[in-house]
Structures are given as C-alpha cells and as structure tokens.
Image (cartoon, rainbow, N blue to C red; front, side, top):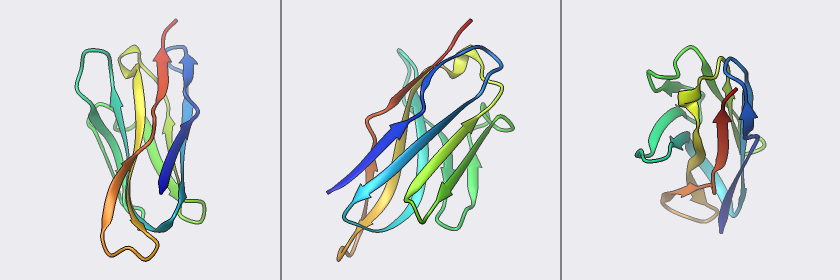
Amino acid sequence: QVQLVESGGGLVQPGGSLRLSCAASGSIGSINDMNWYRQAPGKQRELVATITRGGSTNYADSVKGRFTISRDNTKNTVYLHMNRLKPEDTAVYYCNADVRKIWGTYSSYYWGQGTQVTVSS
C-alpha cells in the first residue's frame, strides 16, 4: 500500500506565505512525477504544479512567479512554497504522485487526503 500525507495548510492573510508538504510512504519502489492540484468550492480540480524525478517543473499560469514546487527524493517528499498568496488561491490542495511499488512493473497515481488553504483578511 502507498499513502500520501499532506501538511502545512491553514489560514493566511493576503500577501502571506505558506509551505505545503506531502510525504509518500509504504511499498515504494520509485516515484516519477509529483504534482500539486487544488479544488476551490464549486470548481473543478486543477493542476497547480508538477515536478519530475529529475527536477523539471511546470506551473499553472495563475501561480507562476509566486509558487515553487520542489522535492526531496531521499524522503519521498514534495513541497509547495506559496508566496504572495491571494484570496483566489483559497482551495483544498491535493498531492498526487506517480508511484511504482516495490517489485511492481507499472506505476499508478496516488492521491493524498488534501489540506485546506484559506487566504483571507
């Protein structure tokens, strides 16, 4: 079994910063892409940022220049550093990872349970 556990969400004022973490554990052989998604009330889940195992990154236009995704492969952990937060960044943030299990041939995507980020004064 593979688990992804997010942490670091909370309430922050506009212009503030937060760092989200997502740690993967379980029967992990290797992790390919790691991603952050978010879902605001009444909206579809959207991809926020992606990082490959080699460290290449990609961002949604709405967060470019404000958010930074990074990962520590030794800890099977991905981070999302969020700066200059806006009220429209309010959402539940989900971690997602493409994981190949130990002894597995193929990889599958797994999801975390989500962490709430609220940007409000």
